[in-house]
Image 1 (tube, rainbow, N blue to C red):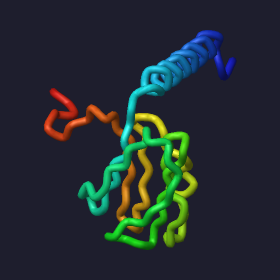
Image 2: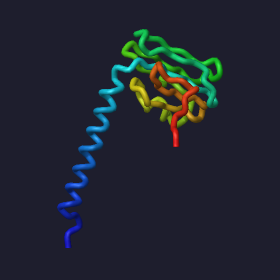
Image 3: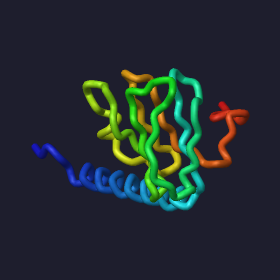
Image 4: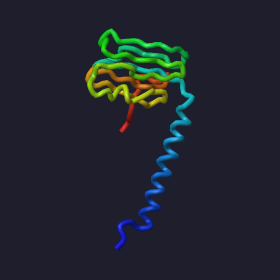
Length: 127
């Protein structure tokens, strides 16, 4: 009795190829889209950062000064310092592609990368 059949291996390889094609096509489509970073504190938009300005700076939010956010010249943004004990937000790395997000849940801060054509007036999903 075999544990893995030949068709199982073919299905796994096929799913892996579909996942790779989906990932790279998403990166290719959204790599040149102008983006902004929306920073939320307690689910309220408190700051929007234009990532296409090619500036390198750090800042803290007035609502919570325990978190340091870094904007890089290459158009990416990341959590640089935080007083939270798990540091998951810092380990999430640089965000630079539309659709990426990172959160510092103990400090109630979320960073989302959205296209500059994004509008809150439009529905996210129509069922």
